[in-house]
Image (cartoon, rainbow, N blue to C red; front, side, top):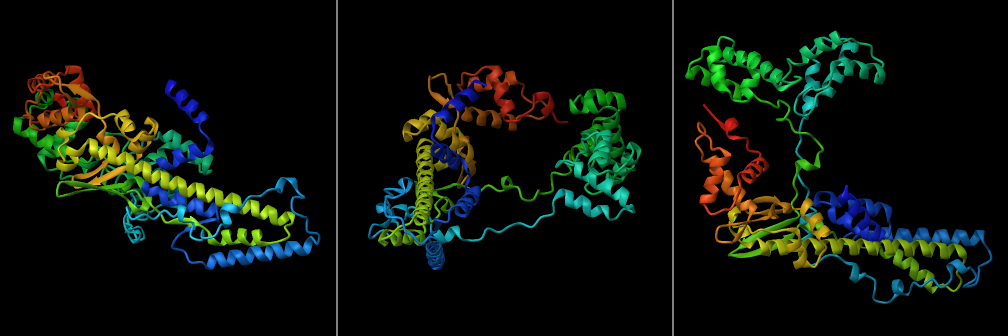
Length: 500
């Protein structure tokens, strides 16, 4: 609550343009083109640099026609300065000679990639979504219109993992109120059973236990391992999830080989049957890097994705309109209104172009500082070489506000020869060693992960053992800190890592 209040106070101190600039900085590269498209649609004075001048001539003709018709309607031209609200319209900066190309507002720079690269079409993968796959199988059932509508509602209630987590009674109410379909819980359950026979196996289950049992039912029932696995899930599910294998083995009188065979059957099952199907139209499914870092014979080279450097400019047609107005001797009220409108649009276009340029320089400045700070990692890809680095370190180097660095780090990606990383990945707190040296907590996490990966899975290392091993390597670390890092790495406790 305190952080939110502080953020609100900060926003109150900023001008509307500064707030818009902050929002623009947060926009990922993959969404920047859409944001520019919105601005182009709202502001006709802004355009792409590669466009022809045909539209400009058309705009000029439309403007001339408009002013001519207005002149017919209003015979008396008002002398200059007669309308106080339109007095002293200064357009000198817009009509000065040699300003045709609006050089100060051109964004293309030799430091950015070839503009032709940004115009290349990105291939779009063609996919069938999980729910479309289920609906396509619905046609194989012999259902009347009433049942088909209910079945479609059931499929629509299945989540992306493949589970039906809604209560049957709630779905009965939904059908009644939203679709005016009267049904019963019994009818819904019968249709749910039919949908549970769809591919993939385990779909439409209400929980993990039912999902795994549905999959086992489709396996050969004459297999002893399958039958035992079914008994384990049906009667000893809690013991199985907690890996209390000794209790299961004793209760079912299983040999070591029999228990291992049954467990192997279970671990081959899919706990998320819907997870194998891609979801369409989700931008987060694609990671479009904002930066590229290449290692050229030991020299790191940073480039900004060309999509972050669009070639924008002020419409020449709008500037010509202002020149025509400036050359005219008589200026009526309607012409002045039109000129003020054009001037406002040009000002808005200039601000947007400047904001895009400032966004580019902020991104490059931040990434250059991160690259210099974590130079060894970008050269080797070894996480243990990463230095402790917090937002303030980069803010001090770039002379940017910490909140600005945070916005860049939380929403931008960099592609390296070792993979694509979110900038937030490079930030970490410090931990001291026996020698007093400060190392990155990410280095400690990497070593912790390596220790667990190399452990004997039949006798996994406890947090106490892991703590001692890290301390032996010279890291001053407490057991509770090891437990915290293990949880952050999504690694379960030793008992749950045990294998037969």
